[in-house]
Length: 327
Length: 254
Image (tube, rainbow over all chains, first blue to last red; front, side, top):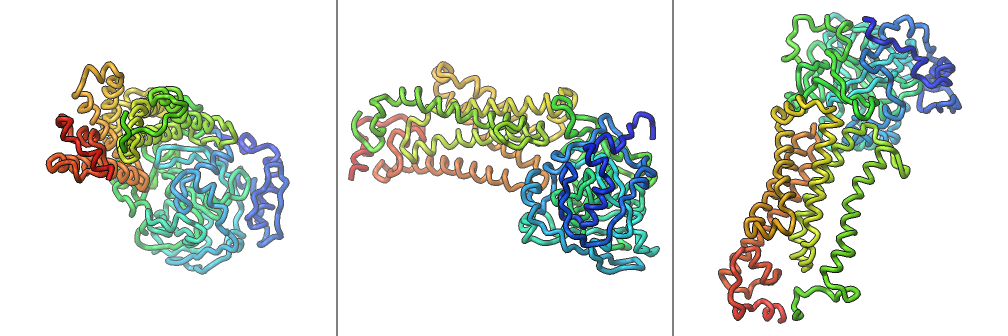
């Protein structure tokens, strides 16, 4: 990390009372296996625990402090309201406010995740069992949407690599594919055939094993709200936001590149890699700069960085690759 | 004024239509046209208990664009409505609606240049030249300028028949506006397609009517049921026949 890149201590961005009680917060919240949004002032209503406690390894988070960063002119995270009321989540409607309005009806318990494909351990796991072995970390990442807007978001979750290694992918696992929940009764947008449901995403296995790739279960030290992809979503901070598949129910290790929703819907606009790249425009619009939600009204626009500013951490993955062709 | 099917309803307070429009309807429409602006301002600041727009810049940009398009569509509805509902005076509101559409288009463009692109003129130029949907939208804006300039009574008189020919540009402008809207959509093109359908109906109405009027003028007025004679003549743009050939009123009184 260069000195230009500000490191943000979680204490700077989290409301103090949440920060002070962070252990209790995260342990409590995830012990309850979520389903509850904890109040800002720690007046948490935690229902009877559905799973074993998940220890919040705050020390672990600090030990990977280099990853907890949002390198940019303005690394100040957006507010809870901004992050939870401006979402692209077409399962709940195509407007930015639809998810906040309609995601409440999604039942995220019980929830199970199926792991399949080229791995030694496969099977279907309840969410609580699935998450039990891991320590949680907080990571403040830049989030860049392909629509050329961006945020900075303090996620809570588990490094994807750690999560995947537990299933012992075989040498034939060259890709990892993710699939979202398909439940039109609770996801009204799935009744509209603008995309092929359920939503699918995928990563090359080495991308998935990069330490920045993150499986998210929380936001601002609280349980992840439904509109942000509860109970489990992916965040790949150097890629456009649509790679961050939400409400994951299936993880498959594959030998061949899996089909992904947006690249199938509009292959000229959205590629499999979808790396943030200011030099490669989307046919309809430029990717050179972005509107940073939370920047001052009169100076919202800022330049976009290659790999969303994470080039140092991820550029090796694409060495020798033509990024214009593999967009 | 003789009592015919096209005569206005009983005057309110004994006021003339001119007076009613000037003192009631026009101010009401003026205020109605400001509602979107007031609403946007409230959403920006979270006033009146409205939720704050998380992305104020894009929010303003989109709302202004959509309001402009809505007003253009309403402007295009004036003629069919006044003909079908026999409210000839509605045309008195049309200029204001058109000018408000222009106002929101200018606001849309200003937000785009000042707030969205942060006054980066290089980027504005590149966008207009390189992004087809912006080229299309910008053309619509340019085409609106002569219409706004020639919207005064004086210009109408001065241009005479050429005025209505010039102002037929609004059909093209509406189409460009919808195209601009359609082209910027990421994948969900339902809303712009709805606008296109409405525009198709509005244009279809004019084509059908003008064809019908032409046919009626060729074959006499006896089959002209829906329209007044003067409307028919205006649509067909022909000189009125001598007064003794008027059979329209007699026909409709049956």
